[in-house]
Length: 124
Image (cartoon, rainbow, N blue to C red; front, side, top):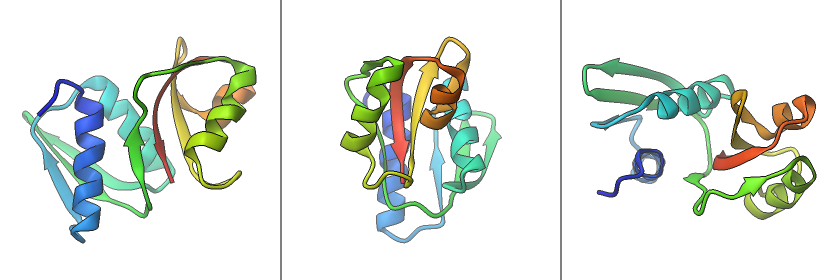
């Protein structure tokens, strides 16, 4: 297991989805991962998640693919469109999650708030 908690968690979520499981239990988590899961929950990609001590139980929602973006590209307002074409299958399908100085947000919120940042992950 690597040191990137976000990439490991999203990889385990994809593996659980491929094996038709309803939930996955993660043994390491962070505040950044929980913020990312909040955004995924708001968009329906995660049904629910619960923290029990060091364990994190995630109930999977409806998504086709989720993955961490490596390397973590710096993105400016004008460059978000380029990464939308690279990582998302269609124009209004899916979300890019961007870490800005105002917190984690989707690419639509970043465009509205005129904020750039670092690409973290995508869901669709």
